[in-house]
Length: 266
Image 1 (tube, helix red, strand yellow):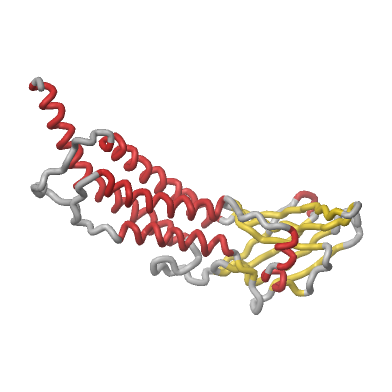
Image 2: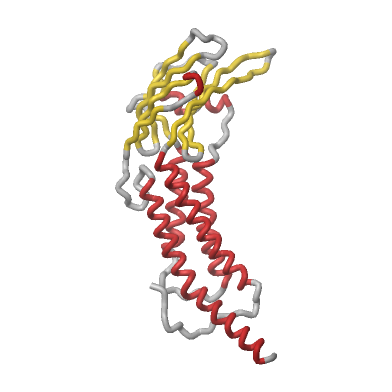
């Protein structure tokens, strides 16, 4: 091997070891700080934050005032709400129902997102800050776990789970309404990105098949926007580190020497 090739190989080897011993731990520390800041945005006790049972009041907006709602969000549940809407094709018919503290409406998406966020932080905490990674596979395994948890957390808030009308009508949350709605009407509260959405479904039996029409009202939830921005930043940081590791994983002959570097990540 020519001297220039040996020098290049040596430089790549040193860069590889620096990446495994230094930059990985530095990036994980930075990533943890971002995720802890994200956790602080949640209105739940996520990794010991002080937002337990944080309460916010929201006024929903809808086109032509077809649907009106004022709701109180406490933690991951709607603990109080007044819902008014006009029945479609019956413009003079208004429906009214409410949610009271004794029977809150659970928003499972918030709890799911918080759980996955906690898992991501736990994956970072499982890595001893003085541990010296020896292979790219070790790092890729850790990053894969973190990325998976972050993606699930973000998806929980952006993509609400689809439910059939029958599932909505039979859901436990529908029992939170007082008074109950007629059998041909159903409502649903859900998170979609940085918004809290109220959907009203009107069922109609047409020629033996059940169809439904939907009306919606929504409101912006500031902490959701903050949390999604931080999750996105964390995902990008994690992906950049993964991409760097992937480059070196192509060099199968790279091995980390057994000596301890002169400096270690703290």
